[in-house]
Image 1 (spheres, rainbow, N blue to C red):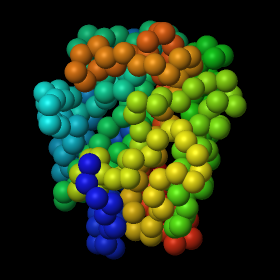
Image 2: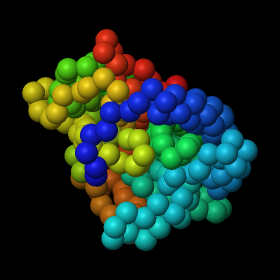
Image 3: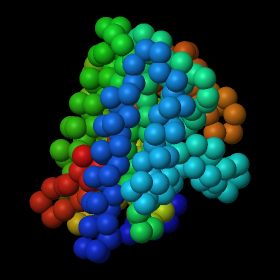
Length: 254
């Protein structure tokens, strides 16, 4: 990761524009998700959108040190699959499948990142509660954002909201800063105390991630990129790119 970067007004405007584009495409992809869908259709639609809007699918061929290039533009996980899973051709959704879609786009060198979770068809009661809890955790943590508070306030809010509902947060992955790099400082864990971490500053752009699961938080690697929940429990993520302001925040990917 890199040092914490404060964005200029011109950079913020680019990220604001990119965030609106990303929100539009994710809303469109969400409408496609239903039983019988080949999830490769989501990948193809996303890549086409990026071409139409002159933005880059930042995840595709992303290769941090020590990793092979990520093969797709979208991260898509189903049920117990967790972070950094990629769509494959001829994977067909079934009724009740929980589907997470996470991606990053780049506009004029600046990145925005967002994720959602939804159900193909009718969710189980537990799945519905998990999705509602994760979304609420993200909302509550985001509402805490303002200049001067510590990252730990966000982490504690995420953890408290999720655990009070009877679920767990992932501990091996975290939210992060974002800008010219997909992952920048500061790291924003889903757990911790309110006095931990650096203070938020006006002009920072951060990704808050509600990384949640129905059972144990232990994650297993399927390969160098893909992961799954070790106990085969459900995984759910909601994420936004957020601008820190003097009096609060602005969600850029909404």
